[in-house]
Image (tube, rainbow, N blue to C red; front, side, top):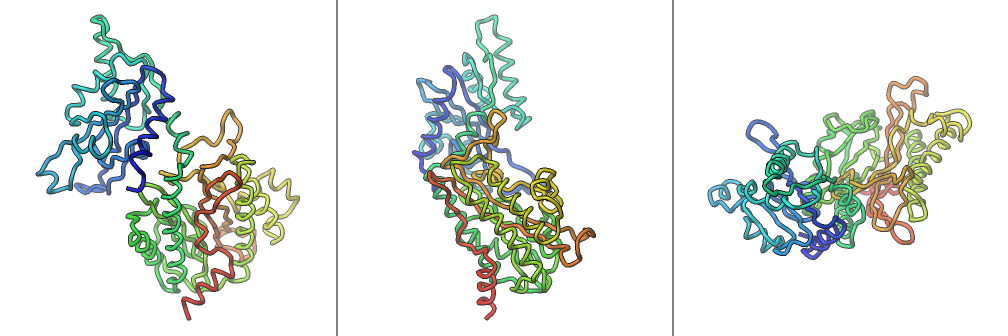
Length: 440
């Protein structure tokens, strides 16, 4: 594991210092999910749960009790079971939870009904995110109601429930040095996969075959899964923002838009590149591509602590609109076209999102109604694009069916930003040179 025990301890301490006195925080692990019949999806821990513990197993509950004399970090988890471990793999067990995950106390998950209500009783406030896990919501409320029923005998139920995410998600927004190192490595692996794809693509391949190049590169470098379903859209499929069928054949003369990134130690990377299947951009493809690239570079240039979250988007929209005007795809006054959002025919999404343990990571974009100021340690994507629908008869036929997006992962620093995904080329000349060399 690349995040140290000290880092997890620091996170728990920081969270507990923000909690009200005499309170308790409760987090259930992610449940296992059935894929079909008796086959389950590969297990992936809940991001909040992992952020505070690094504990990778299902059927677990984490409890934080600031000021508790006998230990502030309590973990309920599965017991060791030789028969089950033969079938499904090793378990930490309560002993391993203490020895390897720094729990102060650990108990079998089957004993939670007997132990956790006693930890809740007498606490004034419960930090818990209601609505994320209906089954656990009901279980938790059954414990609280059981305490309420004993009020006449002196039992003290909690008086208030508060969303834990209000505190925790703001913490997650700021990446520590250890987190930055993991994300830098994930970005490098994903960048290598995009380079591999540019070198490997040939007319006649299927989109899923190109996707396989990414998965191979991810896994051979230790990233066991993509951070999200990969988008491999050849030709007009590149105009479908969340195209994941990846089943069509790649054709000579088309572009292919690939949005793919690996997950490493639960941290996501997220890169999009658009490149020609045959190795050379057509005049129209290049013209649109250059507009998107100019917009992306402009947006990255204003990604620094002097600006708010929406500033890169505003800059990208301005450059894209001017480019569409120059190419004749839009007509009118630039400022008015921005104001009326006329560009949304060709650019219908935002320019980025937070990135971290989730590909669309947690964290507020506005505070008090105003766009949030960018601060060092935040990581976001910068991903403008242009998409000319294949059936858009308001533009000349030569533009139709061209979809382009360019996306990089960007870390805000004290004096600007760092492009974590800089290792994969994006200038037209660099892409064509790389592809030409691979075909030599």
